[in-house]
Amino acid sequence: MNNTIAENLKAVKATIPEGVKLVAVSKTKSNSEIMEAYNVGHRCFGENKAQELERKTGELPKDIDWHFIGHLQTNKVKNIVPFVAMIEGVDRLRVLKEINKQAARHERVVKCLLQFHIAEEDTKFGLDREEVKELLLSEDYKAMQNVHIVGVMGMATFTEDMDQVRREFKFLKSIFDWLKKDYFADQPDFKEVSMGMSGDYPIAIEEGATMVRVGSLIFGERNYGKNV
Image (cartoon, rainbow, N blue to C red; front, side):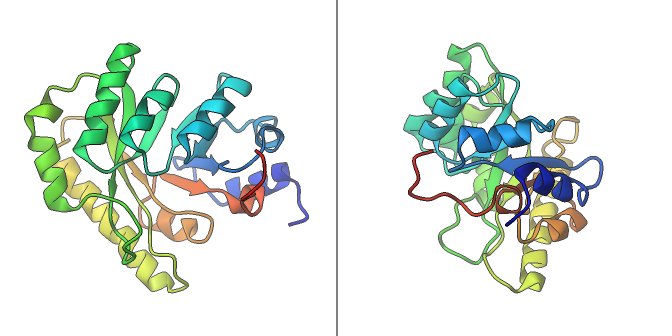
């Protein structure tokens, strides 16, 4: 990729309609690469490793909105709760309880998305309808004061079959609509549908995404094995 990060970011933003938030996926990327995007005005970045995110937040500007977009282990929650703007991948009650506990310690309310399993791949994490009903009706959830569920998130199957990807995005949007109607009708902040990545985000937007997570189109391929 010969373009600069700033040029790539501008090109991606030109394809995203107003009202859809771009999360620039900066996992494995260096501070200097992130600052190239920051210096042209971008403020929302996504990381999927708690330790890497913790380090970067201490080294980079404080007005960045960090989204945690990976599978979150319960014992890592305490590392990111003090500063994270949103946790996109809540896939079980146990994690939500720990987020609430740690957020209370820091006198914060942390925005969260419920992650659903929409792909045909077994490697993807996420809730199903019965599990989320059980979560939302639980006394544990009803007692939480320091988490704020604002929408849903899902990852489509890694495939070249865009018809399948579109079906999976439609499915996630249908889950959002169901939850909005039956559980969050009186909560205007429940409005986010986070889906779509570099290879499929235009389809995600067509199917109702309010947030897209784009990495390689902005930063190039991931720097696995590099000291970031």
